[in-house]
Length: 514
Image 1 (spheres, rainbow, N blue to C red):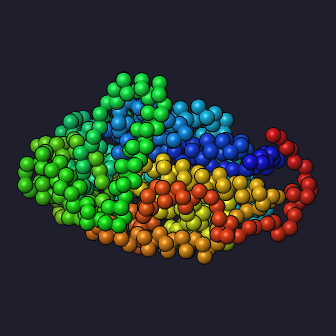
Image 2: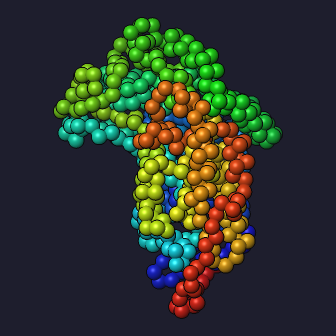
């Protein structure tokens, strides 16, 4: 792929590609750029270290619910995963090693928050405003991810609470929960990992549950030294293990997307998992979901139900409605005196804050463009935002497999996108045609109608404010990889500069460096 030189003037720096975020998506994009021969790029990270959600989520018990060998890049296998489902610290360490192994550090700008990005239609480039200054880029790749900005509900009286309040993704490790009365708000993937850990130390734990989750047994264990030795000596065994994990999940997809009624057997396994630990029929009734399994994210735990059965743990089958001093009040009127409130209430998934900072060719933000729902061509490009691609964009999420598979597919699309720009030659941009974006979105939403996420009888974070599923991909990872293998130029308008700008004509002095 042809490489362009980096251009600097006194006002700003120009790069070929600017990547926003350094989690799996951002680091994966950086590796792919280097493998394609593109070295004129930067990775802009608002925090002081790489890692994304696996850097930020350091709460007690934090771990992945996808097997380790599948939750890693195919081009960077790790034969030394310590557990079948590895913890946060091991995944974060893996991402740090990816940054080192692929020599990404010179491209990464830490403590650099993107505060605004605006498309310049005259010059066909993006103007970025960051906490460390300004720069421009031919192409912007947004890899901020949907699980990056915590969502805390607006609870009346919360601002007057005299105790400690924090979100699970911003865990306060300086605050000692031992001997405290703690309210845990939410029963999602984070909460079911936090509850078993903190219940051992707190004086009393009150769990506020709006909707009970389906919880399956977690087949977690140490990976033996012999297994790790085998994977190091014979790398194909790591690939084989990954392939088996992938294949099993591909076979499960049809139950989620086409035949949700077949999930009844899975529900019976989850109910037995509960019955083993929850003997109190009243508590069991509180914890039994009334919707089809899979409609909300299926959770994995062997310790959640035993923790809830402890005498100093209370389950309130209602959401938090109000705070009165140190008293938390549920929607059903239940009250509890607490010293600390921990929110496990998820993230801004369908209303990602980065969308409010990106301004397209018509002067509207991406948030405004998506006011009636997120949609992007092949999960990557939105109409009105030329040369702007999103990694883990609309309808690219998964309900049963590894997001790394989807990320790598989107990186294939990114690579071909840049190749197409090179083939076009000169200064050019690709703008997704609104008709192509709409046609793709209609096909996705038509397929979504039969899925468990739409028919299962629940309200989940997969749905936006309008009740539309703009989050999950209604098919297999193989289908998505096929759909994103290459860029179809028929789905794009090729943009050229309206006229040569002074910079393009050499009307001002430029300092050029390789």
